[in-house]
Length: 421
Image (cartoon, rainbow, N blue to C red):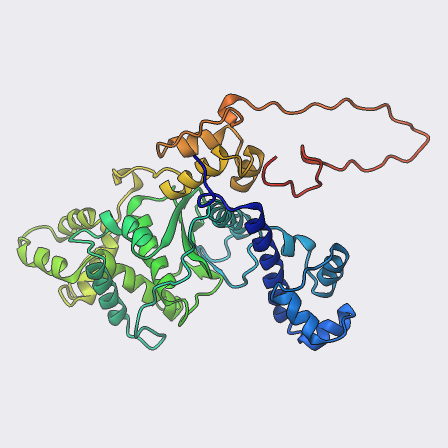
């Protein structure tokens, strides 16, 4: 049974919509470095108090005013009115190959996915996570080894045990309130991190091997935990050695310490057979830690357990994707699938809208939710069948100019279509 606590009322949603417009007007004005007095003059208001009332949601904006505001602030009207637009600037950082041609398309996909996650949560009346955790004492002057120590301490604080990779995903979501979403991404992109006022998100390319995914999650968690002090750039280029920005090398060292606790590494190193093959030992233990052979090698070197003078062929430490027994994870996450199932089942979001947000076919939604054990029951859902409406084509009068065809959603609204049709 649905209650007022599970789904926001019309009045609540109306108040949220007004607040959204007010906040985005303020944000767009500040982005363009326009003062309230200047904005008031451009809009034709008497004084800045009127602008202040608009930006705090006290004064409602008429439709014709909204059009003028959008023009003054150089934004489309949808920037202010569409709840699926991510208005925050500098909120994303993409971990990708240098000069990747795929960033633009992936960025669009990431925006739609995260906006969907935010909106679903709000439609269901679920609490936000505005109080993010931040690592103490970490900045751009922090030595790389100190970042590894911070990762080690974080693993201990989260209770990740001897093999942190096995518990990291759940701990990030439950203890740190970070949403981890597995996505299909091009080979040139490993993932992304998104820091928003109401929550943090990490996107991981699910097509990569599990040991790469684990390291990327640790790397992006560092950015989440240090965003206030060291916000990453829009592009985190996957480079080698000293070519990489200091912040990215700190993130790698943090991930190394997080996934390979020093005490466990030291214990395994002391227990090894000195006469054994070092390459095989590193590969075997890297498998146990769920990391790459190269990652464990550098952890040993940085911990002072293995000297760089010891001859090690890093090419022999490579692990192939076929060597990964973890398999490919299901798309997105269990929490995302639960919310998707709930908004569809309760009629809060239409099949058409959900498929557009996830850039998939309507019938694909069933596979997404059922992979995590959810099964919406409403007969209107895609697996019950969707009929594409057909329209008769009127005869064309060749004597008059042809008018452009305007697509309308089933409820009659022009795009973007409303959420429930």
